[in-house]
Amino acid sequence: MMLLVPAWRISTKRLYLICSVVGILSLASLGILLWGKTQAAGPPRGGLTRTQAIQAAWEHVDPGALGVTSAEVREDFNTGFDLPVHHWAWIVTFNGTWQLLCSGACDRTTEWVAIDYGSGVWIASQYSYPNRR
Image (tube, rainbow, N blue to C red; front, side, top):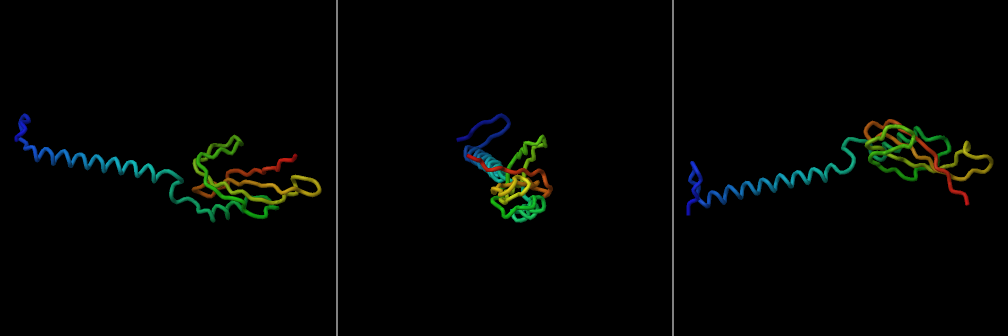
């Protein structure tokens, strides 16, 4: 059976072959696009490691810090201090007892330190106070 196309005479087998190749290439392109989006989810490559972020944060935490509670990467981090939103930042939380926060016996509090994910530059720090009941 022959399919008549103006200016071309294409056999049915050749038409099926061309359609199959176009379909396979379309599916492959779609797969690459979807795979690229899943790879882009998360922080970009080349940023600080968790260990590097903790080391950088230790340089900015106030005296009285005893240890690291957590270190996590956050996207579009807003400090709440009228600073620009940072697209990717490490937030390192320390526990400790800071004498400037109280008089007499001090309760343990936490302090978070925000470090830029790519450069390691200090962004901001803040204390968190325990809830008293």
